[in-house]
Image (cartoon, rainbow, N blue to C red; front, side, top):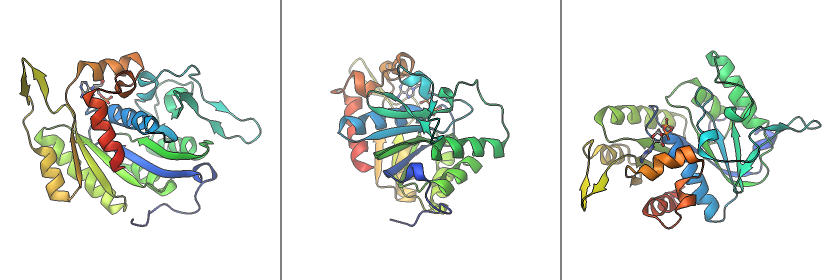
Length: 257
Ligand code: ADP
């Protein structure tokens, strides 16, 4: 694997994490958080020790997508480190669990908050930390790559052409940061009705990304009411329907990371 571009020493809290996976998209609303959370719970279902870091301080989605009993992060008074909350064995850190409202911050403050949340958390031993990246390709991404050695990136997109252009930007950013993109998830790709398969946004932008950038794996994720309702019930789809076809798609993605 390529050498990561993170600067300086690895923070104490990250030392016992084997793989850090960034789930990224250039646009909001394409299903990045849905993919991050379901990927994390799939890996946990495969027996891995997993954490999720929700790096979106402006619109943290994690608190809606999982149902931890304890919805506030706790700071260890002695070590001053943050203790993640937990749901079904997966460790969780989100700005949405920090007990404050939605952030109104300038760029440097955001980077500081993300840096602090990520690196002062006592994650313990993890096989995978899945990072739900904020949308875009800005300084938050750079900060994350500088403080944490990302192992791999998964890019989430939708089939529209415009989304393809944005994904290309994301792929180039990770390539500059020397983080390999291992998979593209083309979300909301199709739906099945009346025994037929419909592609409401057209086909092919995922294939174009794979061909143009040589990303080895492409996954088509269907539009499912259960996927959108699982975002509201706080139980990830792969947990509520572990034998379903969506769960199978995530198991294949889990093998790639
Ligand atoms: P992002 O993190 O990219 O902003 P989210 O994962 O929050 O996107 O998804 C945006 C909305 O779309 C959420 O309400 C989510 O439940 C819904 N959604 C995402 N993927 C699907 C899908 N494949 N089928 C149905 N609804 C989906």
